[in-house]
Image 1 (cartoon, rainbow, N blue to C red):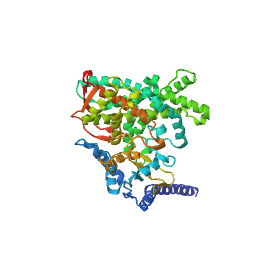
Image 2: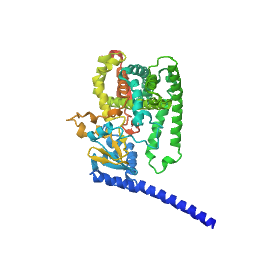
Image 3: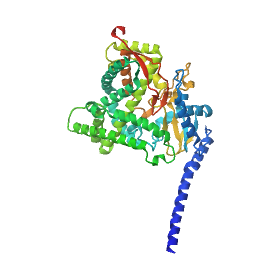
Image 4: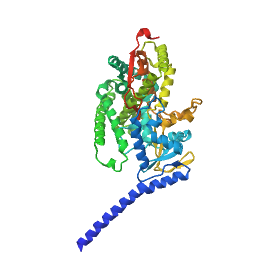
Length: 506
């Protein structure tokens, strides 16, 4: 009798657990998605039909694999059909305000300036999603924290990125760029030079010189570690929506955690020693880390420890600006050199302006503001090849956006690259006057804190490059941009570099 009763209890528990799990799965993968779909369609929004087979996700992944197999020939900056063929087709079929499915999650495409003005302004209502697959392993700090913590960090970090502090960026970029140019001089004699890995190293070198100054040598190995993480993250995000993948042990996540541990260890040693030195009245550090720590100490003294940042917070912010500063400027410079190599007349005009402003001298901070043509070229590259090509937001409760209601569970997608390439906005006959349609660094309170840093670095690097070399695309160059976390050149950037002698300069 007792065994029979125990068996009945166990069986009941098993059945309760089974049906509870089955109900949760039914809600997650059918009832909730269909409810969200009905909500969107009732508001007149078109989109694909949700299917248990995850057809949209399968189509997105299939097209994403097929597109890079063929370079864009002839050369063209109409890259959206190559980079995002699925979204290109979805929008042509359903309109700019439409929805697709990423697994069981509806993704609502937003291309209306009034709508994404609200998204970027109401930062406490529209928050960034945090993919479970990577969490804080790569993206950290201001890039993904929210609410009061974000406001506190932004306030403390702002002084480090004040425009007046950017003169040190010029010095750091000149030092790093001169090393790169010496390397190019040796390699070009053997033929073409693939400038892509050199530019990745350059921008990593600059950010660590500017951020860590005297302790630069201790942390510069992070450059290569974070580059490896970018590749791993791309692979993870391609398979992260496979059911249960995030719960299983796997080599990709294991390696991501190993790199994250190494990066944090290197940064922790530098940060703690620097903080101790500042407290003891050591040297007056004016690099980014020094300015950040002094701003943090001042905030703690004035407002209490609870309003400051912990050592862990500082480390996460160092990870954030080292990753973002390295990656975004590298791709900006890369696509700039590609386009200038393709369009020789603009290369000549840029070099002519640079030589008129600086001659054969190193660029200086004050002179950079006089580079009007160079600034125009960089802005056009940022339009055509924006480093951050799309961003996403979520809501925690039903929220009004424009004339629609967005329920929780819907992801809002602002595809900057689609906006930047929209012929209705950027047609030759009517260049847009609405600044909200140009979003390479975001907009509103959460715009990129390192925007000025990146542009100063890019101008200095471009100045030194054009002072020393003329460039053209190698016959082996293949125009094949691919979406990683930013837009990378799939086959590298082989250029033919010709040295410009002093007598040939203006």
